Image (tube, rainbow, N blue to C red; front, side, top):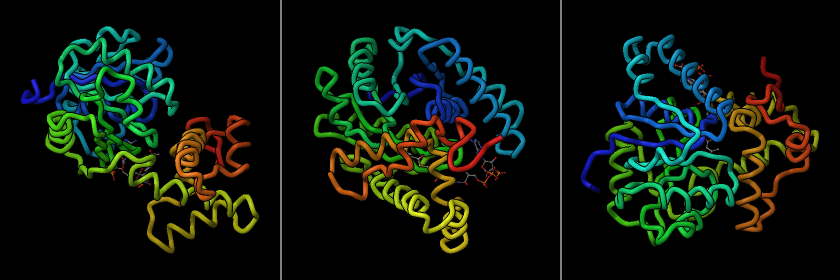
Length: 288
Ligand code: CAA
């Protein structure tokens, strides 16, 4: 029922975004079922969440007892059928429209509650296209979190012309009152608000390095020291993942055909070489 507070959530994908969403939901008292495609991925996702919870304890953000309680609310699976009883599902898989669309078609058939929220945390794919993969799109919404999810307070909430008002209200209430996030609403356009601004900025910084105008270290120092950003654009691209930055740029460029969204050759070659940023141990910087 739409008026019921969400207490059972499913998260699909246990990479950096999925793990972060699962963690904040479990910390907020929600029963969380996390899905990934293989046992190895599930094991990696579990480790990611446990490490982040440990970090929360060492920084004083949560107590040992709260960490144990959060762990007790997390279950992991490789079987999507377990999502039948979920009141909300957050999809956080690879930034590939065909993969996400297939997943929404499957979820639409599996999740039984007609007022369940089917949310995508896509960075750039229009939600309308994911809604079109379901029967009528009324349960589908964009709920875009930011990495690291336990730290950054923003959620972009994206509705389409098919999203039911009760679904949007239910998702907003959950994000704000249960998770304690700040919600902004955005129209359903590629990149929504944040990535439509952020990604051209990251690409411009990469182009400056590519053209030999400045070193990666100095672009980063420039934006940290000159504009008080917590980290510079090159380090941030590494943190987001260079493959993800490329995928978002591809989607934005396909939609708007503006040169500022085109991924620069340096980014393409780094992705081809497997230099994906922090998660692969090497991007513009090396990570231990
Ligand atoms: N999980 C839990 N807590 C974490 C964490 C994590 N993964 N990462 C950092 N923290 C906590 C730390 O424990 C620390 O807590 P205390 O201050 O209470 O001790 C605090 O956050 C700060 O962390 P650090 O001291 O380790 O490091 P820092 O001060 O250099 O901050 C940062 C690191 C939070 C990543 C900061 O540099 C930052 O906010 N950078 C910008 C990140 C950003 O812009 N993200 C958006 C990316 S775009 C996106 O996500 C959307 C998309 O679609 C691409």
